[in-house]
Image (cartoon, rainbow, N blue to C red; front, side, top):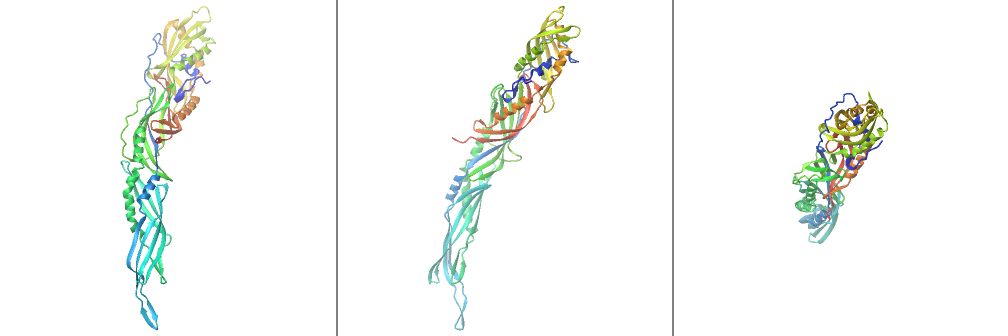
Length: 502
């Protein structure tokens, strides 16, 4: 029977039968210490141990402006050709009237230019690729003082591949590599001869590469990668609200270091893959103070898969909510008499149940009731019986039992022996022992849904955390001054991104 209600972030009310088991004082070996008064109240808070996480922090940048800036930096005229006194047609032997003559070399001056067209931009994987068409116009002038000009043209495609690196201080750097291929080598056909005018473009393009690499740091700075990384780092020192009330539950994030795992390009979109190594702590109650922000640490290479979030979340049974639950179970049981040895049938009327955490990790239950025998010779007895017990559960199990019951005696009792005798009856024991434990399975499933909704697309400060819970494990149930709680260790996939700038 479902008697409790799970509240957001893990607060639940346990079933009546579970807490009614605390009345199983007839179990063999229970200790009797009459008139000791109520057990002391515990004041310890619920505290979860910190968990280490490596959270993905993608930083986005639009590299369109970088392409436009590099377009401005690459000159339109890449190199020129000027080869004076070139041999356009070499000397050769010819036979004239049975006489072999040697023709002179035909000299000329070869001049020309290689220019580029508009730069196109693509990005894929780790490469920023600038593609530019090359056009060569070459002329042979003053050909042996006879012909004035012969012209040839040729086209090529050059690709400048830029790759980025990040220095230890998170400053972006870049390297440039240019490759080209002629679609048709520039040449002149003159007097039946082919004059190849191909220039070694590698040597000619070297100054262009040097110019690009010299201007890249300034252009990359305009992507504002480091300022975005600093914002992400500083914003991560915060506390996230996993549940706002009943009770408030917070997850505090304390970054430890920032790791770099490379980047990807898709079109004009650059994504840096960072891993934020942080401690996550769970707090129940008031919002904990944000941890003090530390300066951005030096770059560290990513050493493990990023995107894993780990934290503890408590399933809490508030003692105040358990009291009416227990009372309903006791009232229901009081409709039948209890068979008390040596006394006979006894009817009980239950007035009040008091539950709280006591020392030694135990739960204290005070039952105020009146007992009267069915036989008229027995006088009515009234008072409060105090019981303590230790909550227990198996590893990674949501089924809760109670062990090591102790009778703490009676207070304000009239006929206290009858009250203790009633509490120790086999009928009470067998009735309550049949319900030894509360199965948390339904509460646990509700909890997972609430956790998922609490941290999915969570906005806090300047960043957004997106998470998906993929695994959970339950710890050992404990009784504290704040409540009876079952720690649940949760893990999942997550990432943190900065809000878009207004």
